[in-house]
Length: 293
Image 1 (cartoon, rainbow, N blue to C red):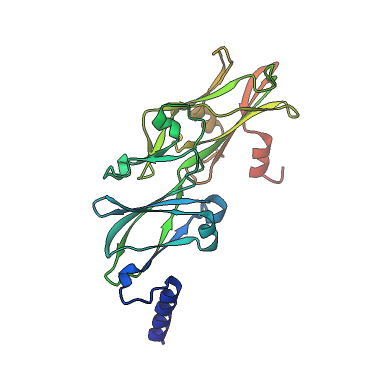
Image 2 (image 1 turned 180 degrees about the horizontal axis):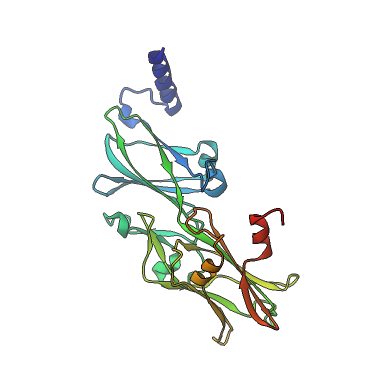
């Protein structure tokens, strides 16, 4: 019975791939399934990842194949197929590499020297955010039979941040009256999913909401630890720093924000009033943590 089931499965694979020739080397017989469960046990790949850039390296870390897996393929299959000769390969996947992501040095021969980052890092121009990036890497061995099925698990390469400012009026043009500068951030992540590089500043886009009388910025940064040198400055157009805070201090004061998780939001509320400046988390974040409130 087991033998019949095995034969049936192989027949289905052959029909699915259209591999009916004697020369099986022309068939895509490496099946790679993508998986992302965030911080739980439920598959949330399609909710979080809409595009995958896939890179195949041989045993000596030479790039041998690339492929873009679009949203349609992710939704319908959550997988892709490759045509690979028998041997050892490293599969590297970058999830959600859109306009705010560029990959460089693919032929570096060392995973630690291949980087993905905002184009501004490579062009020496302003960085305002990163894409919501995810990363996966796995070594596979294609056997002499060519048939292989494997799962590629993703993890997050980014942290989401929001900064809301209340108590400051708009600029004369109706826009935000101050800009946001986030200092001492990593500029890139490499193909080992390690953030690095000479620390730099991001300049997130601030918008002013006339009905709510607040300014907000939403952006992504590469992953950091609880102990970090990141500072957040509110700056007037004149260059004067209106207020500055250390992210490490903010995380210490708000232990409910666990930046070791895959899915993380760091929400910061800065309020100016007659008593001075108050820095806390917004009410909506507290309500999400405890819906009974």
